[in-house]
Length: 539
Image (cartoon, rainbow, N blue to C red; front, top):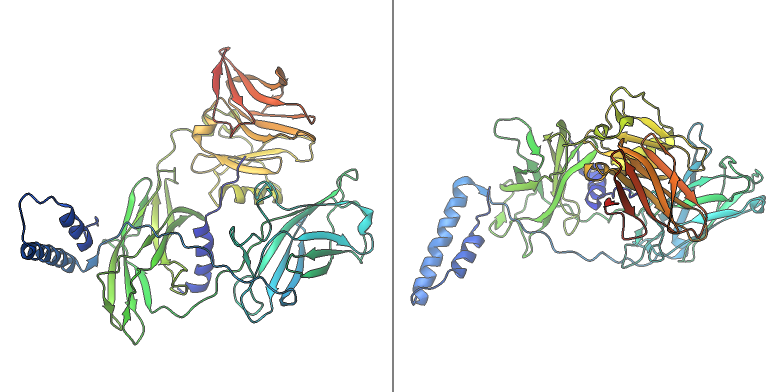
């Protein structure tokens, strides 16, 4: 199961909103010039006639723009900007602070190690740290440290907690700056060793920094036969530093009738942005027009977001107090949205090169259409009136991570399959956009109708040649039997509440899952490929 990827634009906006928010067709003169240059010459033209006609075309286009006072929108995506590479922090210029938190009733701990740059220059960290337990009682239990949890993505040799110059460093924040400090988050479970006031976590960073951080809480003991497991997430870096104030302040115009703008599923949102020079000196755009971000949000999640280049070449100088109005367009994807919901539209210059240009926002209405199918059409576990189940705090966190804030249909919280497995029970829920989401053995994700309308789909495929292989997923009501092909032989597995799950010892090769339907036909999902691509009829 894949966690929905979170968006880089969302993260940038989340930070910049905290800091900065206090409170139609393409037909510009460049387009006209391009068309004139590409038109075929049917007879010989003199150079004078060419210049004369070109001048007339430019004047005509300029007159059209002047008549509306609105600069047309430019459909130009920005070119990729290589990331800024910062020097590596010196060992003595880094401080660390450990924070541990235990949710009520939970035996697990969540924690973070804040890292602060105390030097006088910007610096970053790279590479993989080493985390170990030291002090009195440290040797009373084996500590297993993992660098990435299933929620953050599977670990890989090319990934590291602090990243790299080519794959994104971790820029450290400063203690006196307003943004949150850069930090490494982790989860810790199953401590069956001795409790001791002398226990400490030792963090060693490739730059030479070495910290011993006193442990004030310990996770509860779940299974003394297993090691204590500590899982590090990818480090969060501080945002880029702020530069000089930018004098052009934006404002989004509302719809003509005074009502909120409407972001409609599968259509383009047209609106206008005014830029006002709030300084006392004229402002002139450079040779390269700046980039801007636009994003529509509703119910705590992104509905649409794009990045474009501002159509600034015809603006010239913006005098003090002068306002320039630009036409804007934001395509809204055809992904299912809530039928009707309030939201907000954000607009602002991208952090490069205008880092402190403020964002502005305006209310919008988000209009969507109901999905063609709902999970309740094929899974009886989602039938209306099914008893609501309250999720534990850990599952609530998984819900938020999997849905990115997407609303859950009231009454749809229910446990699907309770098992006495280390991973716990299987939970599932339905979102207001018709998605089926699940928390399945420490892995969370959501699925649209093209997946759950299949008779059978695999939600978890954890093959391990030495340890325990786990295979699980969901089956429609019409599925009467599920078999897993192990070393060429079909083995039946239990189907309960539209959910199937099986474990196999290391070395057993599970190559497919086969479903027998109520009409006697069979379908198969192949495993250990680039990923299950849907069912294939067989037999």
